[in-house]
Length: 293
Image 1: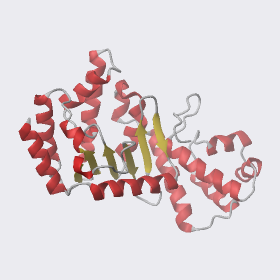
Image 2: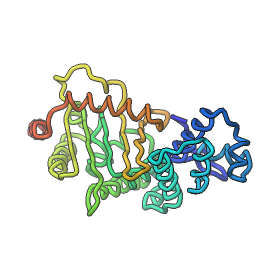
Image 3: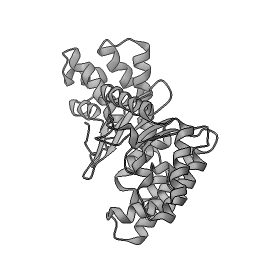
Image 4: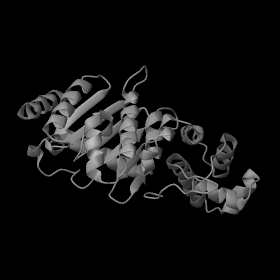
C-alpha cells in the first residue's frame, strides 16, 4: 500500500511485488472470488495467496498465468505486462547490487535498486538539486545540514553512494533523466557560495548530455501544481512497464504504485514542465545565477 515501508521477517514486500499483488487482488475481487479459489487453482495454501497479494513473495510465471486464466483475463497485453512485473520483481529481489555496500543509504535502498533497473526518471524538485546531478561537496553539505547523521564516516559513505548512483547517467544504456527544478533550489546557498558555484558549474556540464533534460521553473511562473510536494517517477521498458512514484517526507518514504497515481503525477509533471523554461533558457539562467556567486 502507498506509504508502507517494506515488511521485514521471512518475507520482504517490494514496490513491484506490491504493485503486482495489488493488481491480482483487484482482478480476483472483480470476479467475486475468494482467496481459497485462487489457492485451489495454484495448488497452494490460502496464506500463500495472501502473501502474493501483499507482495511478500516473488511470483512464478505459471502462477501469474494460472491466476489470469482463473480471473478470465485473456488480454495478451495485460498478461504480458503482469509477467513483466513478476520478472522484474524477481530480479530486484535477487540482485546483489552495489547499493547493498552502503548502509548509509538506509530507506533509499529500495529506490536506488529500482533506479538501477529503470530506463527513465522524471523528477520535480523544489528545494534541492536532484541527487543524480549533485557534486560530492553539495551532497555532503546537504547531509550535514540534514542532521540525520552524527558519524562523519557515515556521511562520507552516504556521499560515496550518491556519487555511485550517477554512473547510471553514463555508459552504453544510460538512464534518461528529465529534471525540473525550482529556481529557489539553484539560489539556496547549500555549503556556501563556493560549493554552490561549483554545483552550478557541474550542472551546466551535465545537462549537455543527450540523455538529460533539465528545466528551471522560474520565480516568475508564480503559483504552480507542484507547490505542495517534490516527487520522482521511475519508468521501465518492456512488456511489464510500470511507472512508480516516489516521495520523501520528513517522517516517511511514500510509494505510489497504482496506475491512477502514475497518471495523476504524470499530468502534474507535464503541467510543471509547461511552466518551466526551455533547456537553453534554463542553462542561461543557471549561468547567470552562477555568475552572481
